[in-house]
Every structure is written in structure tokens, then in C-alpha cells.
Length: 69
Image (cartoon, rainbow, N blue to C red; front, side, top):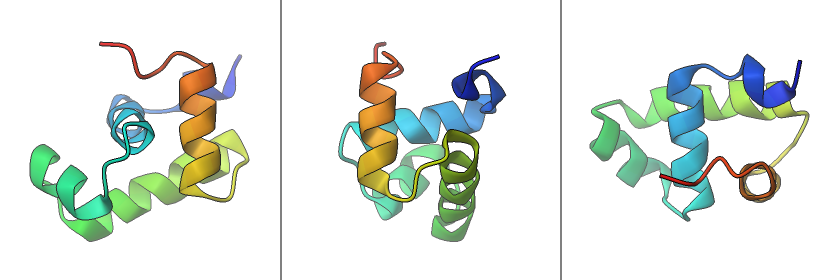
């Protein structure tokens, strides 16, 4: 099983938007979430992908082709 398979649907959406360069506040507005909820999703994403930053997560998403519509 790949790490990306462990991501929830919502985490995959958040990761895609991070990879597109969106900031937390914009993601929160778009998904009708609080910024804190977005940050929680990001923490789960970092843990599941074994990364420690938005940049690393974005690179992972791009390499795994998670950003395609």
C-alpha cells in the first residue's frame, strides 16, 4: 500500500491545493473549513507521507500526479 492510499479524500483535496500553491486561508474558504481544520489535515498528511513541510508535501503530490483534475 502506498502512503497516498492512506490519505482520506479530504486530505487528498487539501494536498492538491497545497501543491497548487494555495495558502491555508484560501483552502479553508474554498472547502468551507476553518483554517485550524486545514492545518489538522496538513499535520495528518505530513505524518502519513513522512514529510515535514508544505514544500515536501507539494513535491510528493506533484511526483505522484495527485494534482491532475
